[in-house]
Length: 95
Image 1 (spheres, helix red, strand yellow):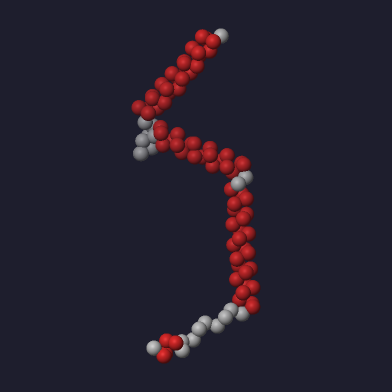
Image 2: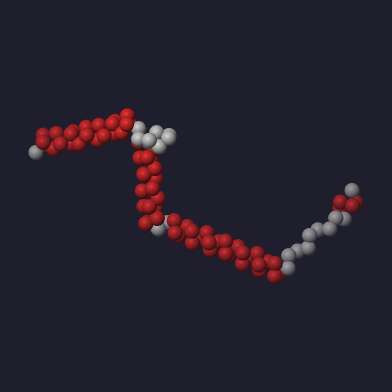
């Protein structure tokens, strides 16, 4: 037990080591801030939203092997046609 108590503690870091650690931390922080600023740009946000919408549409209209899913496409086109027809009828009734 006495041997464990007498075990050497690591030497405290030197001033140069502390400065090097601080410089490395500053570099990492600057990189993180630059990346966050880039991601927060409205153009980048819009680009990510468009890409997400494209992926969702692709998932909805394709089978797992990549071929078009005609059943789903028919439902989507039929639904869109029904909405347009309903809007046309409502416009005719109001006008």
